[in-house]
Image 1 (tube, rainbow, N blue to C red):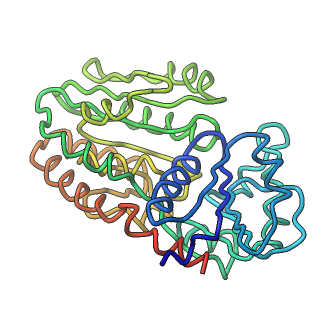
Image 2: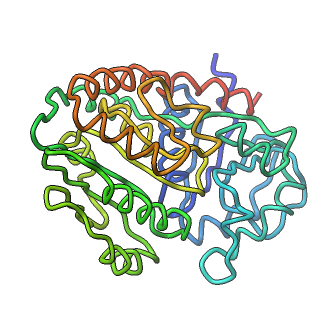
Length: 320
């Protein structure tokens, strides 16, 4: 007998980005086990959420709402450090997270780092997941380049800290020494993209190294398949879904020493303290195809741990 048959979960997501993708995966998995799920990611869905009550109606949202008359069956999902993301023009709703925490039955975060930095001692940690489709698609990548190395960085230009990370990576490329041809594909879009493009012109790279701004890349999985190494730098992140995707495609990862990254990056990734360590790590990988393959295979194994079936029970327990 399905003990959830009379229960309905209403999920509200932001319109784009990682939280939306995570909630879509969750919706799909919960429906498989017989839970009725309604998913919204638009303005009217946000309005409707304010008026949904009832013993068997549950709400999960990563978008703060204006009011709530009971904490019962209300779950707030926080994916980022909203204290840094608050902006009266671009993200005014982020100012409401504090009060939304008060009327939440449970608060869910993807990493212990966020639990600590936001000082939410009773938060439940449920890690982000990868779709089985991406895990299977990642297995299609077999070939690694030898003479021409393709680097990839996938990020969001909507936050200054992430956008500045792109410039740090370009600065690092300017210090690389190798005889191989190296191309960095930068994928992503957002408010600060044009500013970063302009500022990137001041960096002088060796003639055999170049970078390309691709903007929003619709076929991002094809870009992963064409790439050899994933590189990243950010001072505003928790558990980037792009890391999970890169691991699924067997890419070694080099990134800066941001606290939350240690929680989920496996042995196939290199977390460095500064740009000099980054340059050294990247040079060693560029000049060793065997090392690229070794670390990439380790990451592919790590990615399997983030299958949705490994976390669906954690979400189901909220409805019991």
